[in-house]
Image (cartoon, rainbow, N blue to C red; front, side):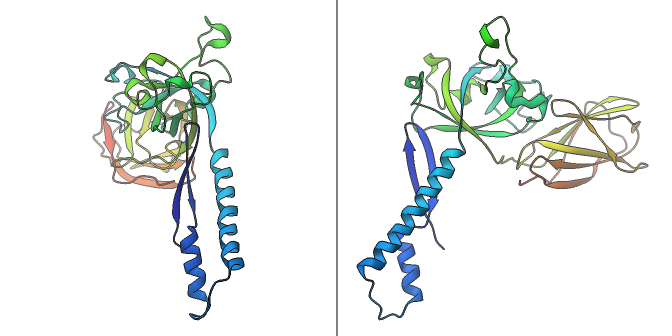
Length: 293
């Protein structure tokens, strides 16, 4: 069935809601009935009542998707200070993330398991500090860093335990907040990541230890499990070392490398022949495959 797109707002909360449009619904019913049939008022009222019920259910689901948090910014007007970080992506342009990024409070960062995930964020004009919102605006950011608690401040500061907080790059933050505000109340939800190009694998380690930074994931954006295979080995399951870095306690120098990744969204892909036998530590290899959920 065709759909109409209804946009409603509560304060500064954008709540796009797909609903069956009333005129399309009636047209659909008309197609099923004899062409000589004339709609009665009661039939038309029933059709519009159905639309009302669908709208209410859709809005309830949309509202439930949003969580409350706060947001600050760092890294300067060009976001140069956001490069690197606790996910290990180093140059965020090369890794596929650009400037629309954020450091997450420990509650959201989840010891690095959230690295690469995407969050849709909007300023919440209904809460204290909402006067610094840019109403109707939203921005999608990728998680690339940790905002640690500061125990020199009461309760660990904005990134203290239990607080959902986004320390966003300044260019990303200024899409939704007025500069003079400094900190704003936000609503956020995790969303699907859209990436350009394929998944990338950055190689580090030593002769008997391989450390792989897995970058630029689409879909859920984050790694749930990973494996590596050398030319002369079976698949070896890796474990998370820190951030988006996964380790294998194996000597794989001189072997071509293939990888397999399962995302937190549940999609599994094998990446064959990613690195040739002459790869070196410090190199990053791209692929032409990516995730969609």
